[in-house]
Every structure is written in C-alpha cells, then in structure tokens.
Length: 306
Image (cartoon, rainbow, N blue to C red; front, side, top):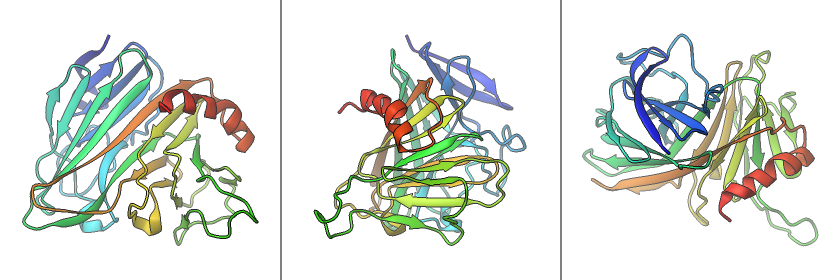
C-alpha cells in the first residue's frame, strides 16, 4: 500500500513522503524539483544532504542542497546552474507526486519530475520532463544527477567487448576531465567495471564518463545498494564525447549521473527522460569485478525486467 503524506523535513516545511512500507522517498516542494531523501523505511538516507544548505529557500545563486536534481547538458554555467531555489507546484498521484517548476527566466525551460513508487517492491520510477517555453529552439540533453552520501563505492559497468583478435575496432569511450588522476587510490580499473570510492580524506575531485550500453550503474554504502537503470539509445548523440554515464566525487559526496541524447528541442516541445531506482540490502562494498558479479549483479538482473 502506498502512503503519501506532507511533512517537514531537513528544515523545509513542505515536503512529501511516499512510503510503500519497504522504502520511502522524500521530495521538497519549497525548492526544486528536488528529491532529497531515498532509503529503506526507517533506515538512513542514501542521498547526501548538505547541512549548511538544506532548508534554505530563495536567492539568486545556485545552491547544491544535495539529493537528486535535474540539469541541462552540456555544462554551461549560465544555463546549467539556474538557481532552483523557489517553490514548485505539486500534484499528488495515486502512487507518488509530480513536481513542476516555474519557467526558468533565463532559459525558457520548465522542468517536471514525476516520482512513482511500486506498491510491493523496493523500486521507484522517476520521469524527468523538460519543456521549451522560450522564444527559440534550444539544444540540450537531460542530465539526472543523484548525489550520494560519503564512504560508498560507485560501480560503473563497461560496455560488453570482444577481445583480440575477434575485434579490431574500438567499442566505447571512457572519458577523463582535466583533473582526473588515474593513479588516485579511489579508482579500481577492472575489466568489467570501473569502481570509484568516495573518501572524505581525499581532497581532490575526481570524475569519469563513459558510454554504458548495459543501462545500469550502482552505489553501495553501508551494505545498501542504490541501483539506477536508465535508457541507452543506439546511434544517439551523447554529450561529453559520447557519455551517458558519469560519476564525480569530492571529500563530501559522490554523484551518479546519467544523460539522455542531445537534441534540438523546438518551441513548446517536451523531452522526457526516465530512470528506475532500486534499493537492495546486504550488498557488501565491492573490491573488484568478482565481488560485483557475485553480490550485486544477481540483484541487478532480478529487477532489470530483462
């Protein structure tokens, strides 16, 4: 049974909790659209909350807050970092809520995040919509960023490959930024997965991007796995040299980011981008490919619908 109630949370007075007795999702309507909490019922929030920022409203500067947000790619400061510091319209659904922002004054984009929780599984469907209500066509890709708490490890699957001499052509990109350090101890470069650990003692940011045709990625923290399923469009044009999956970390948190296809969006046209989230308990933090395949992959397959 789905229970939806309006509650105060993290200093915001107008939040909505969706609870199916297994998991709970909390979104605030005071800013956003922003999902601020996701976890098993009565357990810790897997999302990061910035203690100096949660509960704030208003202002002309972009505030990170934490949680899950919706951005536009490519990353252009004047467009991407539009301050989502103001109330959103809330529509209550039978199994969740729909959050609709005002039209962004500088971009003409209106964002909608729809959250639907399955009644009897640890599964959430998150639909992101962006409508161009400006004055001319705009080219962008939807960019869904989940900001996760410290001391976990991200699992980033490689696309399937054929080994020499069966294939002579490249199979997929793995992209670095100017500050990516391949020797950083937070990385494990596996044959099937790249692992990126969040470590509060490491002061330098790290980021990686890749094309992931498997359609999932995960973050394991305190033996709880957060699994994101997302679409892959063959022959679609992806931003950042062809990335549909990126991960960024600093001393405070780790971001698990997915991207849709880059598209020129006409006036009054709406672009949608959907993710499915799953929580799984008793999943140890992996140290290598074998750990992922033994503990996490069976759960990924169970909930993938494939």
